[in-house]
Image (tube, rainbow, N blue to C red):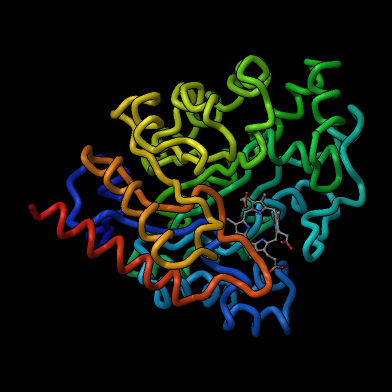
Length: 349
Ligand code: CP3
């Protein structure tokens, strides 16, 4: 790394001059500049053009002063490269025209070569790594979350078809998860080779499983994935929503940094996982719509509870939520500045 990075220092549990911060979904519709680009291009078009992807990825770094960039892409992009037709419908989410329902559907999925199918993603990463002054986080969806979109064909409340497949045919389920696992490993390795300094696995919806089901149907594949990614040497962040009860299992996966949602008190998360793990989190993203005093109070509490031991990265407990009217850019600017100032004072003492 050609520069000192508080984000990478925190991922390695080294001392930091201030607590690093970045925000899930820090690039998006709350930014007027993003909305202007989206008037001309779809999300997929932005992802396909490295110059546009570069611009959208970099914007929050210059605008907010965050300590890491996250590649602008979507967890659906590699699902398209596996052979499924998807669209992202405004205010609904991802829709898949040909969902996965049978063994034949699973057999047809391709564990693609990233250089062949998604070269533009790798070119975007190369552009960014040469220019950014903060590390670039690459990412992919994790198997359960990807499988749930593939099987349901749309966002889901109860994951009925997904769970039915999981419980009714364990061999078939495992074959789907392992295929996704193989894709994830190849895709994440290609991102690191192109210049990603860390990888985050988004398992947004896995918190819908019981601990028993997580351990039986998901954990083995997660262990294989993280073990295959270990020699990339980069921090491997694993995040999901409503995963309080799953955190101790998350700590067994081989992930090196654990993402925590806002429902879990951050100190309790750190105690449950063990202080050998750096953690990332966990402000309720809806607080970005609250009066500054409420936002500052909860932010301060999170920092006070979590920064006494090394290995803490400030983030939201889930992504910046889109609404009309949107979150104000100024709120995220002020929050970032507050975290930097408050924690550098505290760490100096
Ligand atoms: O700034 C960043 O965080 C990087 C970009 C990013 C996007 N999607 C861009 C995006 C990342 C990391 C994602 C991950 C993603 N995509 C997840 C995991 C994280 C999470 O939020 O739980 C999931 C579940 C998806 C699937 C997805 N894509 C959803 C649910 C939506 C929202 C649909 C809507 O209209 O609100 C998308 C679309 C999407 N992906 C947008 C952005 C900026 C917004 C819509 C747009 O500009 O068209």
